[in-house]
Image (cartoon, rainbow, N blue to C red):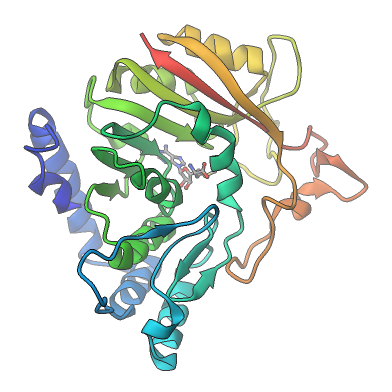
Length: 327
Ligand SMILES: C[S@@+](CC[C@H](N)C(=O)[O-])C[C@H]1O[C@@H](n2cnc3c(N)ncnc32)[C@H](O)[C@@H]1O
């Protein structure tokens, strides 16, 4: 976290330094007395062995699917076991896949499928300042990093995923990728700072999607690009689903708009040049149970008699990806 402060001059973060420092120091204070799960994650992170690489500029590998580093023959069997055991302590691994020294982390989501749906349709990321809201373990940030942006800041308030990010960074060590274990609301108003903002899989978790989009707009420079991914309802009308209680067994889902409504939200919060880049139904090929998660997955959330419905009887998950320009 403090690396962000160290590079504040080159990253042109100086105007936001007091607010960012306060946020980072309060988080460090919180993490310095770990208890419960945070203690478990801290121990796992500490127990991941440092590996000395064969050459100094060891860069991370990104193939069409996986993010990773190293090969199996660079570590002994006992080190392999030590890495695997401690990575497992950080489960559930929702986003990925990753490969560390031949250890394949087969995450619940095949995140490359979403990446491939938009990456060739957005403004290239070279030299851009990027915000990734709800960055999880950093899978997308690590993929973005391969395009040489100026910096990437992720926000991930769930400690399991934040510690997965720290574990991956222990090996990938990418200097211009940062992550804060905080919610979007906690981020100081870094007005007009970001060139590209990713908000994927987060807006439907918000009780006030309009307030979130307004704040995103304020953080962006004029002409900057927002990549927004959200659940949608397939309808040509101006409608929005507000689940009575749960949606696909999730309690924290609030508004699922039609595409028309999502576009209206963007227009009314200061965005223009709105394009729908993709609409896809979530299939078990993309989200499924693996040995790296202990929880249920997509097929458990759908009606076994009629998989076009969730177990609650709502339309099964369909996701849209939009790009929009901050005016
Ligand atoms: C469905 S996942 C999406 C992860 C990733 N962006 C993707 O598209 O695959 C939502 C993530 O957003 C995080 N999240 C939820 N509410 C958030 C908030 N208010 N601010 C920042 N992150 C949030 C969750 O912890 C979770 O990791």
